[in-house]
Length: 257
Ligand SMILES: [Fe+2]
Image (tube, rainbow, N blue to C red; front, side, top):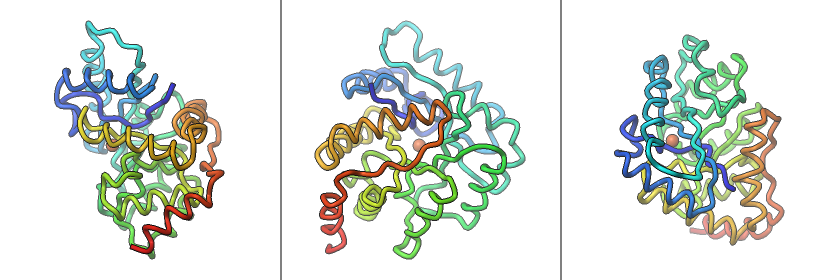
């Protein structure tokens, strides 16, 4: 069964699901798509990190109350990294993926802040391994694309949003998502679903795209094997597609546009 390491399935806690009904619909969709485990990763900031976990745990209990589902939901968090992350070092362990030292982090979409690399490095110095959410969506210029191999070389994991492969976040994000995959710089993929609507549907199309272009086994690697390695706290290297030539051809279509 697939494992989603990034979902805003908890209602009313951030800009994700807006109601219990929406969360329950998401669970049904996850089951249809073949997921067995979903990590609830509400947005967390340095300002609300002391309370967000408890709030999320309470909401998760409400989501599970009175329903039957085969989906296992595990609460973690998506930390909005800022330069003062070291001030909340003691609280970071409440938001890791399972019992691992892997922490899902992001910056505001469309912006790559000047302090981004410092903040990522700070987190590593605190003993955590950052999984950077949606690197394809920070509006990196072509000059900035070398950031990806630099970050990966320094031990940061990259997690591409499934919908990016099918253009949900625009052509630039699509092009970069495919380029990162082709270049062997993607460690995991995830839905980053914010409700039962377009983004979860886009994730389904992203899964189809990956199946068609790199194969069902590769999709299993990205959505099962890599997450299991992360959750086991193992060292995780980026996924290397076996069909690079096919991906190179797909990517060349975008370069020509
Ligand atoms: Fe997210």
